[in-house]
Image (cartoon, rainbow, N blue to C red; front, side, top):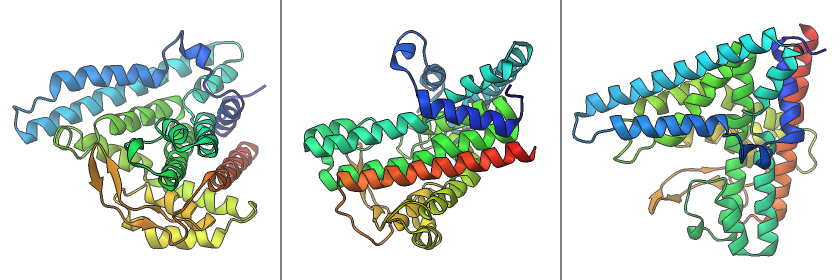
Length: 321
């Protein structure tokens, strides 16, 4: 029987997500926890993000939203753990609940659909990549679609897989939900446009801090997986990550993106368009930019290998405990 060991619970949560993912039929009936959090953030933002108030007050109000969301999420985590601890087979219940907040299977399936779209045509590929990137799909050609999908795969391996499990092992269910709250806040209000530059500043900084260690762990896992994935280079992953990651506009996203690029001989990131504006960013890696469906499948193999390596680390921690 699974006990309340943090490494064992994290391993079980990853395994459940890898096998089951997010069943669409379930979430047609029950809202996803992240979607519920998003609704609350939308309501608070609409009420508090007033452009008529001073910049300092907008920063303070945004910080208040971060504090309220993080406390509510962590408090919910305490309650979930308490209920699971009192239930028969409670550890299994908690592991299943935690799996809902891991994004391994969903990310894999979305990127696989982009590869299938590229096999079919540009319109299908653009429609598929719209589910995994924030940029305008209509501005992307075929190689641009493929690069965008690989970048999302690398970055979300850190944000959607490694970081939630890192905080789960460290702080249990409250840590897992607290991290998901910060990451959701960053994705919703942590932008640099005029509407959110002040209001979302605390959200962006909080997510940067919470993701700092996991993003670097994700780069290491991708480099480690490259040792076992045919055609990938662990040396290339590490060298590119240490050379290029600091040049990325994000203090964290550059690490897994650069590791993925170096492992597979790609060039990722670079100038991109979001909401009609061009974002200038450095290239991660100095390999090929003209990527296609087969390159996406190679990236998925590396992603899968990194997840297996992560599972092995969790299993070792469980055995040592």
